[in-house]
Length: 104
Image (cartoon, rainbow, N blue to C red; front, top):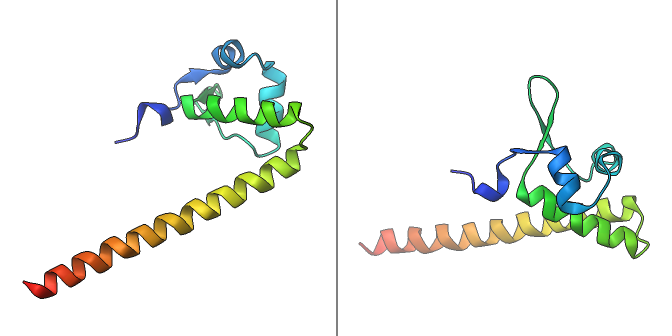
């Protein structure tokens, strides 16, 4: 079951109110591949609390002068590191339970 943080239920207007970013700026970050809202059948963008946190991080980096292409590259590197870390953890779990099953 997905965490409430990841459920895409928040409209762009509410995201604007929560982050202080203009709706145009939020759509621009989507165009640049930094954020990925879901769309309803009528095309309304829906965001999650995780998306809002990410938008705030992006806005802070932009205020520091970091370009969107650098932010995107950093985000991709973070995702790769996370995937590698999760793979290592899963491998350790699998190895542990395989060795435990052999002892039985």
